[in-house]
Amino acid sequence: MEDDKYAVILARRADNMLIAHIDFLAQVSPSAARNLYADFNKSMILLSKNPFRQPFADELDATGIPANTYRKKIFYNGYKALYIIENTTVYVDAIIDCRQENKNLY
Image (tube, rainbow, N blue to C red):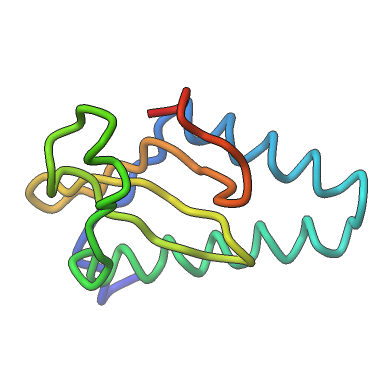
């Protein structure tokens, strides 16, 4: 898109996490899985326009990750994309279901 200022790169790990969330949700509700994927895509478009609008992931401070390193984009009923910004590129490193215990993912 012409007004995109940032390239959004999804890490293989994040891609695998997204696929796992969609596969799990599809077993319960195929339409919910489609909605998750659609909302994820909309969220990535928003990040490509202005990734600085999203807050830092302060919940990561206790994990040893330096403060103000990762930002988070919440989408579709409690999923979270964790990303960093370098120059004009957004690197999405993880897709997390906020309703689950995720301490081992950080």
